[in-house]
Image (cartoon, rainbow, N blue to C red):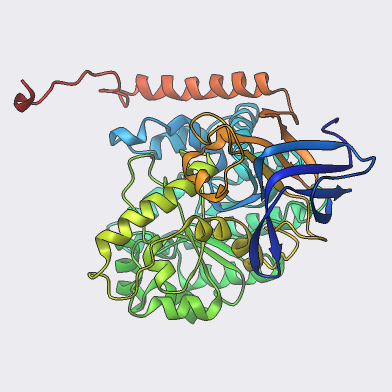
Length: 478
């Protein structure tokens, strides 16, 4: 079939279907797509005249929703941050790119995210110019997103976040209020752009880089836009300590006190929650914990996914940055979470649940969609938007050459390269493993050019020392 048909059928091996809030596996069923909407899911083989995409050895899942991304920033830091280097200088160089280079980098990263089955992103761009770049590429490719710029943005946030004197925070207030106003204008201009797929969202950096005055302005802006709030929340001990020092409460309690939890809220990382008091606050308001397994690169320490599940929190899987492979992050969430559960069980003050692949899949789809107030997303069901990914479960290293009897566990052997087709609103963006909404080769070459430009600058500044060093075996190995 042509991947540009508006009415077609996807004949699957397995389909993850939704019945209300329950996800079920249906074997040898087909998905009927009509003008961007799922018309029906029917058992057995399709009989009719519509074009058919046959994927008999694949799993069809709802398009993944990442509750936390910084799209333009990933590739220049990948492979460097794992060596103990900070990503801050790279972020500064990305922020200084001209629009053409910025769009090239955004396109490369967004192509990777799509390639891994993620059709919706809550995008916290590190500058407003990056948010504009995201909108330009997302509109062209038909991507679904909730974009906004981090407030305070890069590089202004660095001095506020790393301050040793709280006077720095209060001195930043006027500039932060100007950023909030600029981001509200961005939201007004782009609300429902891309045929309704783009719905901007206010994205404060974190609780320790804001004051009551800027938080009040954020709340008013978020209520006007009506899409909610996306932030780093209790992401480290320094944040929690700063908020306790200034306001005598935890970050979660402070947000509740300020009325900022009375809307959809997605909070990333939550490494420094007060587990004796914060979960009740987050549950009360339906706040989503966005767990980002590769937040600091491939060597990052684990995050409290099993503790969050044990506390009854809503949990989504987020890309963050460095790794754009959503399927890999979903896998890491389960594997790392099960390891962590064994390590913290008995030492954590509350219950701990070892995550299953069902937990991760639900969090990546229906949990996030419902928290956004979008019953038409995150599920394969009649009437839902036709956002889906098709994942090969039979190929080398993932399957056994045939349709497996227990398909979800094969996701733990898969990665983004196992994704064959991806569609948003029924429009294929990835078909047979290739990006088809743009010239894939040009997207790759232009993204590479910009990454190499950034690496060259880092090298000139002496920031890549040790990148190609060898390794001396310990004396015990001789």
